[in-house]
Amino acid sequence: MLRWLGKPDCAALILRLTLAGIFICQGGLKVLKCEGGTSWFHGESPMPPYLQAVVAWGELACGIALLIGLCTRVAALGIIVIMIGAIVMVTWRSDFTTLHTSRGFLVEVGYEYNYAIIAMGASLVILGAGALSVDHLLWRRKPHAPDQQLSTGK
Image (tube, rainbow, N blue to C red; front, side):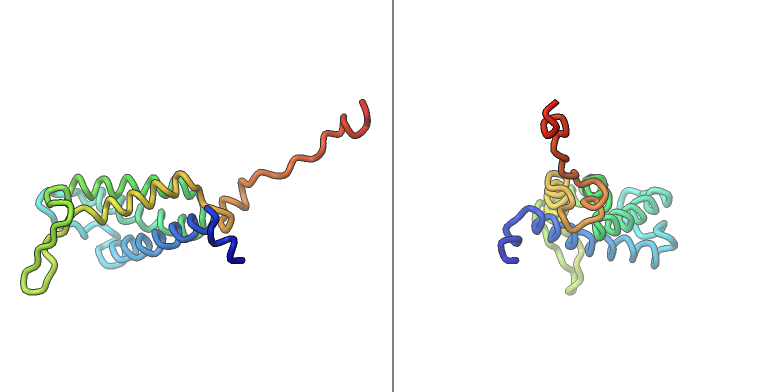
């Protein structure tokens, strides 16, 4: 059992479940509390409501896909795209590790969080879903049957 902890399947599982938790919560909150995800962004540059909904539902869908390990590489790419969009639209204006507060409330953050999420997503694109996933059940390679020509002597 402990030998399994050092395997790529374990790393993929940890990354999948961590990202799933983050994005199910983030996407779910936006969808449930912000008119179906259309009114959560109030930044300097306007984001149309349809694009806000696409991002919110994308976060939720990618989080659920990662949770069960279905289309993991595609879901991880979706999260990478969302994080690149977050950097371009919001956090790139700040330093890498900026933290400004006003009376104890967070006002501005850097883009190190987005980079960390991108690195986690890229790791899943490389690793895949791992053994404990729907992807593995659907698309694992079956062991090849022995060549019948060799066994029959033909």
